[in-house]
Image 1: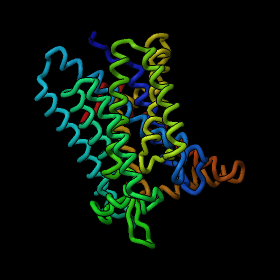
Image 2 (image 1 turned 180 degrees about the vertical axis):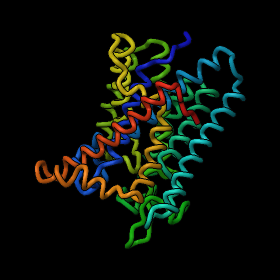
Image 3 (image 1 turned 135 degrees about the vertical axis):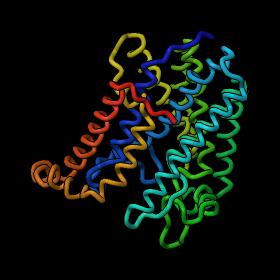
Length: 356
């Protein structure tokens, strides 16, 4: 297997995913958000529901392109790579907890949440890196099948798949108590879309990215295309019995989103790496954690600095009478993404790349 160069297409796909994260996480007015920019209320899959699975899929692709070459060339021992991967995962997880601690301390009415997006990214990175370093492809495929089948069985044995009463929410409530994303005021039960049990199928998303990254290294683009289409079809078929659900990260959701991610990766590779199209989003991609974590910190600080007044003055007061309330809300989100594009553009110009 040849040693790959850094692929601009992967940086672009990662960057576009991060930009989409910022866009959907930062509207001017949460009461006026266009439907495609909102998560499904429970079952279903909107374009916004694709964003986090895409990022976890790219985590697996990145491991295939960055970790495996070092192992194959003997540049580092399995033990050294394992230590580096676990230490990096711990730093990502720690950053996520630190941001949640700051939010709980700084934001009025906020409560401490232990799980989170960065925490899940750290856990999936550790898992997919360990699989890449210590197992063969056959074992990885077996793990993918076993986890998807086992998690499906666990969901069925848990009874209800409804909010608050499903086994995923009940497990997170038992483990984290009130330190979760949401608490049902009537029952006192908790739910977290990035909880512990749902991290198992999320790891499968990264493992599928690992396999896609290996095909990309081997230039097996036909295999990547076939796998993407089959994953979409299997996810759609499975959803007839087990609905697409991001909150539970159902197996059908895993396959459905991995199928789209595979095709997006293939399209980016063909257009950017092979046909020379501009790598839109690359600057976000090379500073992905910095952009996401920085935007999360900005979300915590801005309300205390008068964000609501700024939003009314700069966007809502003059846009709403002309275009309605949804346009200024979206315009604020676009401006937020543009601000962060300027930040990562300046960082890239100065070759500043923040790596955890």
